[in-house]
Image (tube, rainbow, N blue to C red; front, side, top):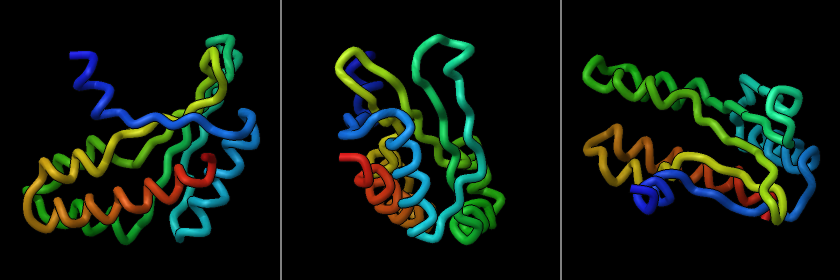
Length: 127
């Protein structure tokens, strides 16, 4: 089960510190025409560097939920990235959207493949 979860959730080690990792993710998100719609800082609550960024693109979101039969995908929206301190540095974790897209057929699967490409570009800002 743990191995399956490691495939579903993708993690990369950042080359940067906590604050700079967040800033680079936010900047790349906006460069790609997406928006950071939520930012949550959990440092005081959990005692380690830990934040979550929620990102979205209105066009993609509208396409994803335009058909009633696809509205279950709303549980995966918006896209989230966690930035968290690990013993060997700062990591960024997010859903492996490429793997998820392979499990979904039709137009929605194609759209999720496009989202996977955007996710990859966002995460590439830190490694």
